[in-house]
Image (cartoon, rainbow, N blue to C red):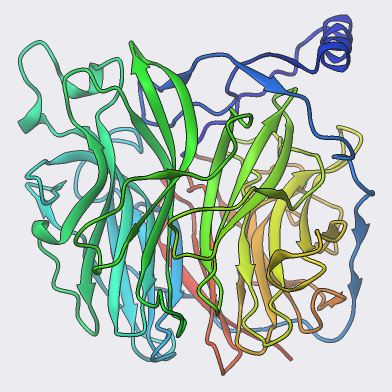
Length: 518
């Protein structure tokens, strides 16, 4: 999705002068470190006059978690799909029937090409708690993804999945670059300065979604010869509560506007909602403040009272400095309050390997009455520059995100190797389930990774010892294994289900395993 651009060869004096400039003037033109990952011709954001971090942004130093109790009991991995290669995966539980799990992944088996010119979302459904799986693609025509407007696309990526209480199921994704059938003379889609694309959602019903191209409708799209918008990193959630907004579908994404000749004037975190099961979508609203000019990695979730939470990442002063913010809506996504900081200032994950890295937020909200705490689980580079990366957890001090957030807690119990791709879920009892990519078993070669997981049953006060989810190291020596893994929890059973790609473009498939607290 996004490509981190490391700038490690900046002379010391230049870095010092830049730091002084920010201290004196508070802002300076800042280039977007993560241009839209739309392929051969990445969309660039024009330099922005970004403000310095807010006062007190550095916060208190992170502390290591207290580890107590027993690690997860990890089930044997199950391969949920039959074709390869595949990368970038997520998973959800049916809120009305916790035996039903649905995973989604980007599949590259239908055509040749890499993640810039290929990719179709594939979903896998299990009706027996993840023991066995069936699979299907979203609608395709001549091996290309196709949508309700009759457009065939080269790329369908950043897949999302959500299920409401009535059994309606939704699959979101970025649809990018027109397939050859839509390339006009002199204007091949892949060579356009700004890539055509949009955010689409396919809607069906369980137990067997019967999707057609008519089921896959646009939220926003621009297929003109000279697109003025571009899209990146979508995320989806549904209101599965008993609130007045139950059944609403929400999608957030990074929205580039004012685009011309491959450069866009602005970008912002957008959110749109559907109140009719994905048939129509509202005009996008901006979630971040206008002062936050370089933002990305949004994630939307819904609380048990129907409150909508949108988390996102803000870039400050240098390319490696980040903070996570959250904005909330109590009127079904019509309006949002002022965003508040969830994390202190931290450094983006940076370590040498071929696959991409990010420090995206992973926001979840407890449904326990009186303890509806908001959690953010994320990866960040350790202090001191050369330190290895960690997985951090912050939690609101009061329910529903009120009262600010705690100082970060480091939940990996090893300092060896690197970590990223954090994911989180909560069950109905308030247990926080987390997982992430981890290279502790291959510290000299970070292309070889595992999945590790832990949980907390006391609101983040203590965590279980880390559990190795994958039985052996996975070869990730490729450019793309995805930008996220996934985890979901059966609401009342308390069992979590992990999902990951075991190699991405290097022969990866969707794999899953049960995680049972002990």
